[in-house]
Figure 1 (tube, rainbow, N blue to C red):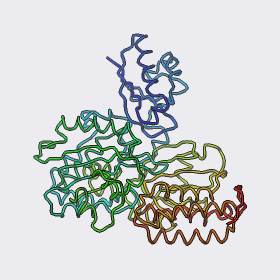
Figure 2: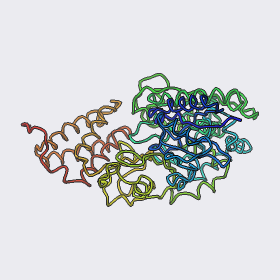
Figure 3: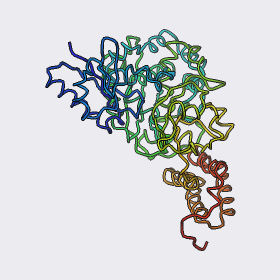
Length: 519
């Protein structure tokens, strides 16, 4: 009987040599006459331990990591195929503290299942949510989503049930379900981990949405920088069609849902839903004015439900276990779990799924283990490149939509990027303007011109040219961008800028190292 070994093919693991590790294990086992079966999975999200190899033993899975090709011979000598002792032995992966403390409602299969196997997905509880949804009418499914308190995980936090209900009630000969998988925020990778590790969870969530709204076609708009996710999704969709989970008759229900994955055009602005729809239609990704909203007039002018990966993948759990079970997690109006992505200057970076309400400090200290450099934490950016920079005295803020907003921050996609005390916050503020200037679609003047003027003005501040007057100009510029921009690209760029100026004023009032020139 062959021994099953799982080796991740997540993008991070691949970058760290996972393919070479898998080959070394197979070659080494073959040379010793050992019968092994290697299954390529996603990652569990403990990225500092990748490639993390797991061996199926009679006592359960035993993990080893991080494993390099050079480690394989020593592991085989130590009997790791039977769970033998070795310096890289981590034991039961579920008991690793980083993982054991989490609330994995959505990511519990990542790193466990074969991502493209319908059979493996179903063996681990997959498609129970869809089966439950097919026993309800459309109103019943939407009611479950609404009562769960699920809010859009893409950043806006808009109640998912309201959006689903709007599309459900819209009258049209054709409706669409579109997944925004254009994950472009700095320090975010939850969508990628899900698409590479458990794509059927996304497919099931979108299928439930189609059943609820009356849509028969769907599209996943996948970020162009995610070739591994794109390949995995295409294979999973093809296997889903063969197994009767997609197509003209899903699960023998008589309901049709056809799903395709499209590769994005490489623009950050296409993470904005209307710009995404323009790109999906084959046009340049430019933001649309609203109204009309996509729920009424979206893809090709038809009612379209647009949610991101994390929103759709929360749905199967809700339908399987009920709205109340999901709503028991979280706090206030932020219910359920949040996929937190911890990156930057951090010792233990990775994916953490936890109920809303955990503080930023808890995430950094209890999960991240502090900075990788060992120096003190000085600033933390939450919510991607448009999120605020928080100093130490704001790190006890709960990760909750309302609590973060009260501190002039945002949850966004759940990305947390940590900086130690060597960071220059004036340059970080300049970067926010530079990022906006580079990524703006150019449709509205406040964003297109404002960001460029912001870079120029910040250069003067950094150079020590009339810093007080130029900081006042930056403040005025931020007010115009907030009030006048067509979408959140320009409207939220002032958040990191003003938070840096407000929370780290000393970095803006010292002479810079750029040459001082006449104005």
